[in-house]
Amino acid sequence: MAFSAADAEQWIPRLRRYAIALTGNREAADDLIQDTLERAWRKRGLWQPGSDLRAWLFTVMHNVHVNGVRSMRPMESLDDSERGAERANEIPAAASAESGVVLSELRAALARLTDEHRQVILLVGLEQMSYAEAALVLDVPIGTVMSRLARGREQLRRLLARDAGAGGPGLRRVK
Amino acid sequence: MNEQRLHAYVDGQASVEERREFETQLAADPELAERVRAYQQQNEALHALYDPLLLEPHQLRVPVEPRSHWRRWGGLAATLALGIALGYVARGSLSMVGASAPIVREAALAHAAFVPEVRHPVEVVASEEQHLVTWLSKRLSVPLKAPSLMAAGYQLLGGRLLPPTQSSDPAPMALLMYENAQGRRLSLLIKRESTNRETAFRYADDQGARVFYWVDGPLGYALAGDVPKEELQSVARLVYQQLNP
Image 1 (cartoon, one colour):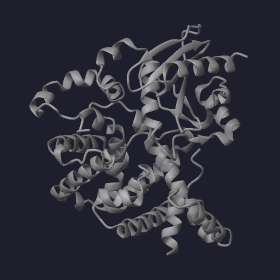
Image 2: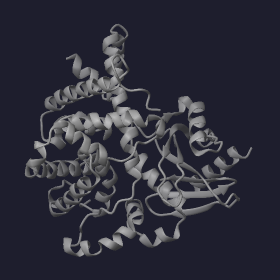
Image 3: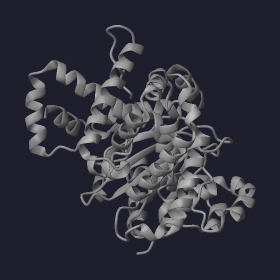
Image 4: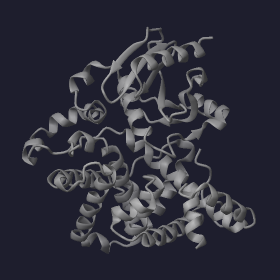
């Protein structure tokens, strides 16, 4: 089966969930996905028919994102707190009222992580990719995925524990 | 090393044997158990925070035509945003979109968005059924019931709350998900209807998802699934019977 635009479009909600979580910004995410879809269409001959289309699209998006981040260097000069605040303003409202406070803390904490840590946490924790798939998408060895995951999660835990106050639980029940 | 096993356990990527071994370790190490719980909660919170995005209308598509061309049609695309969001379900038959009831769109979107989720298709699992029903009833401000579909071979997996998709109708919706022994899933979408009347079963078929829908008192129901029409219809009847004993 050759590459089909309709098949690729089925994955847009998933690409979008990841891109918004990654960039913290709807507009940047939609631009990123549009560029990704364009590139995927141009390079559709490189997709191996029968292989995992989701993983391939995420790989293309990762490459587009890395190139984009590189060309947007000035962004990096913002300090962490500014960047966190900027991101927090632009992400969607919390899913449910009773968990709103905690979810906004998660959002802010996530924004403080490095891109590399955030990518792995989202691909594995949100997109539910296997470690091998995440390694493929990010073009790094599995060992690197594991060490980024370990460091990222631990940092996230500390940030959330700190926000929750001394001795408080990192996160209350989501439900 | 231990660290690797910990994450494989948290992410459900450990084998049954590895799980069992790790759980023995967990029982003896409260500090380790606390970290595991924290990481599991991170995953759950990520879903609670970002899953609603799966249902959001968007105007993105593969630019099969050169860019300048589709850019020009951007305005049209915006007005059809939800239609295009459905496009991935309906595989492009936009004519259908205008004709179908909102609940059909919503059920098809929700089904397409959440059924592929292997580990997190639901927010609250079926083992907490009473909690699930109470929670969803409270959020929809109307008493709900989760019909038992065991007679058709479908077991309740759990449910989730969905954000409203239309500004004209800002009420949240409930989604219950069922699964049979073959791993096939059906979604039952429930939302408040202002009409407060009864309708017959209606059917919408759009390649991506088949949907039976009806209104029963204050609630509208839409059952969506990728199963043959006849099977879906008999399950829809069962849902109706279960709710009207």
